[in-house]
Length: 207
Image (cartoon, rainbow, N blue to C red):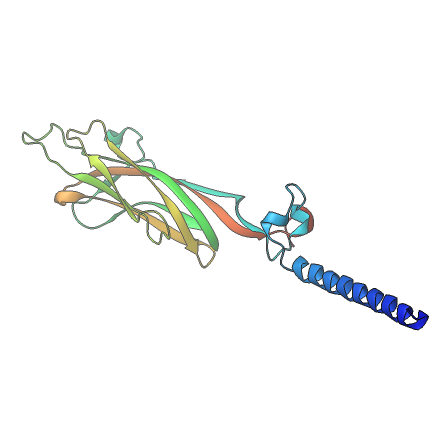
């Protein structure tokens, strides 16, 4: 074989190998842009590797507002936090004032019949507490049957989230009885503000 032919063959082989290496490198680069979870070793990705657009959470703040039905000024109520609930319509039980934002509402309501003595024929009815504007949870929540005779009030818990669009917005929680009956009711409520916090490198809140 002539020397020139041998040299050309070796050069061609080197060029071919270089081309294959270049293609392999390009393929690795392309693949790197499409990494899947199967290619990630546990513990190698950290919070700081995530951008603030890809990492965020819904978290509570320290802003908590509480409210209760005022203490009754009627001597026979013995300082209980109750108001008289009419037989018709919705009776305001408590007002909680909230600022703009998203809030988690939780509370408890009690309903009783201040009828002494109890009627000869038992009355079956329920207390209904209503929280307007809830985005999650039930707007109206029902107690079990309210006992007659003013003893052992029926109780119900309620909760959900509410979005407030302006500061100093009053949220009026109301009560009613089913069956056109009257009685008394009281409410204790707590509202905790929530906010959507975006994080950036190091997992710290963005400014």
